[in-house]
Image (cartoon, rainbow, N blue to C red):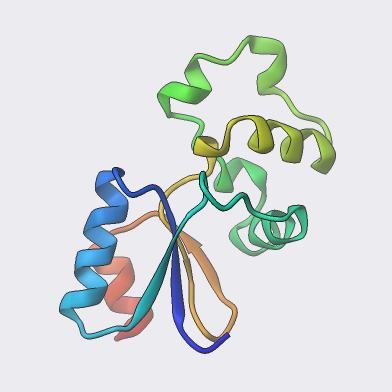
Length: 118
C-alpha cells in the first residue's frame, strides 16, 4: 500500500469531515465507498483485530443497529459478524482510515487525526 485510504460512505458527515481534513493537510488519499465495493472477509477480520474487536468496528449506536432484531445483535463468531456486515455494510463504523504502514483506525476527530499524522 502506497497511500492513505479512507473507507466509508460518500454521504456520511464523518467521512466528509475526514476527507476534508486530509485534503486540508495535504495528505493524499483514496476514498472507497464500501457499500459499492464490498470488503473481503479477511480485510474485515484484520480491521476487527486491529481496532480491538467487532464491537469496536461495528457502530452499535447507529439506526441500522437499533433496527435489527434482538437475536441478530448478539453474533457469537467471526462468521456471524461477517454475515451481519455482509447483509448490512453500513454497520461498519465510519470512516475507517488505513495508512500506508497498515494501521487501521475507526471514526474521525481532528484530535485523533492530528495525533496520527502529526
